[in-house]
Amino acid sequence: MRILIVEDEKHIARSIAEVLKKDSYAVDLAHDGEYGLDCALSAIYDVIVLDIMLPKMDGLCVLKEIRGANISTPVILLTAKGEMEDRVRGLDLGADDYLAKPFYTEELSARIRAMARRKPELRQGGMFTFEDIELTALSLHSSDGETTLLPKEAQIMELLIDNGELVISKETIIEKVWGFDAETEYNQVEKHISAIRKKLSHIRAKANIRTVRGMGYMLTIGGENNVQ
Image 1 (cartoon, rainbow, N blue to C red):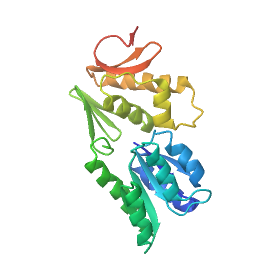
Image 2: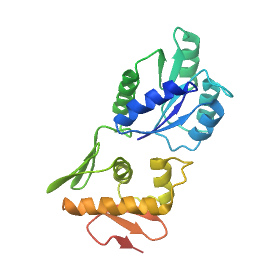
Image 3: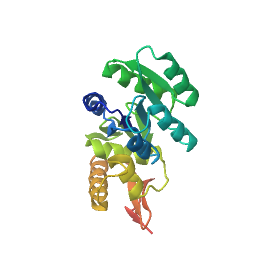
Image 4: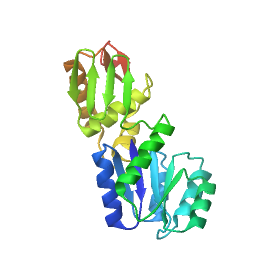
């Protein structure tokens, strides 16, 4: 799961990111409202943590623009302690939750997990299954074995499992795993897919990743790695 943190106090943003990364989340940072909005409008994020007090554009304006663009990504607002009016307005504008500063980063992580339980599509930390394989955090299981994935391998596998037998393009994988402004080359995706295939083979999984020429990748049961 990829999370966007829009927070102008860089030490707070880094602290949040460190805790979330330990939970195997992918995290991007934005330190002003305008850049945060640009990131959010890419619609590649699963959760947005949004401070209200931001330079260039305040968080409530960012939230209004996000919802005005029909982007339903869950948003957790960071508010000043005691600013009830901001909380109420934020919830009215479409925020899903709020957390008053100062707060413990572990509490924010817990709120994200709670949000995931309420929204089945946000299952980070839970179990992803496809046919005979199960993905839990960085562990990939089949009925015949178990292997450990690297963080980006796990994120790619999560994306593939979450989309069933739909084809996922390399562009989508780069956006969801590396971030929409990343300068990642296609060969990086290919290398990670190759590594995942080897690990699927190692655990003798029936599930397989196919390359659909000119389109991307999909999960299937058995068969060749490449299809026309």
